[in-house]
Image (cartoon, rainbow, N blue to C red; front, side, top):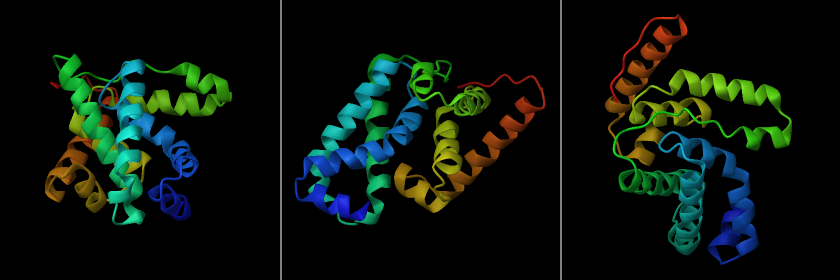
Length: 177
């Protein structure tokens, strides 16, 4: 991946495309924590790719490429969210066509189960859960991506886990977003 990043930094469009393809599913999942409309998610990812390609030469530490592009994506999603949505939304649309093409029904079931568990969390809790559990980022790395204090991230992780645990056990939850 580092070789592709070096080539992309030199303006190699093909290398940049390969980088994006490697992380496209991750970008989609992260965007889906903020916006549910498939077209808006695709717009956010497209805007992210354009901005990232234009500014990749400025990327100083190539080992932080994925964190850097996720940060751009989150900013794009927040801009679309502020522009189009009046209130915080939950994840309740599933892009099943994406999975049906791959015929990976186990992945469909796992993702739907996961998203149904986190759909009612606050946005901040959702994005932290996605970055921590699905993207395997540490609290320190999430701090860099989101620009939050580690204590805030840990608090949100704790609250989100408690809510998920209660929901999983069948408890009635009424969360405010």
